[in-house]
Image (cartoon, rainbow, N blue to C red):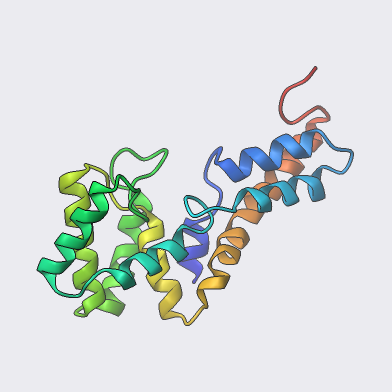
Length: 182
């Protein structure tokens, strides 16, 4: 759990961090206003809820390799995004994925989950040219820890919160607006 929290921590100007800072800078109460904005920005299956989508997607993917490839090919033809694959910042493999992967293998090798993961990653890298991100593996690790999927976004929030608070505190100490001025 510690590894997941550390690796999901705020690590740049993400959507949630930017929301936190913009709203925090425009309010007399920057910390509560900014934190609420950050929380609200986590909504959506492409960001704060990606871990839930990964579990649902891979649960629905057939166990049989041939059927799994057909499932993935059909999904590709729809033009839909593959959950847990690709990243806004990392155009190469997500370095956080490489850190978490040994934990995944220690828990899930050999298993149907590991087999599905290999098929999934291989297919998407070959046919789309994007790489897995940390959300792909942290989904399975949270699942292994028996954390209900409805709590996955909360875990993501907890990991981001310290970064948001640090930014808000840092910028409020400077005495000016956090983002923009008019």
